[in-house]
Length: 67
Image (tube, rainbow, N blue to C red; front, side, top):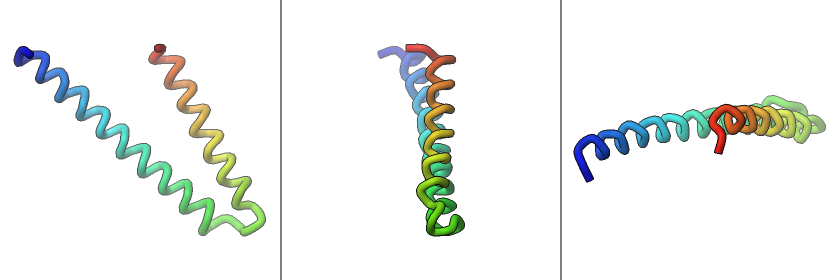
């Protein structure tokens, strides 16, 4: 492994770590809102809307990145 490939691996790893932390923070915020702020009879609706928007954003991300 050359020095440039090791640097590339470190740079890519940093961005994956940042994305992972942002996903964790967004999920915790959505779950907290759904279970503490929403009325009892609307918790499932709030959670489903949150998960639906997460799915849409993941689909848009996949469309731009491609496989």
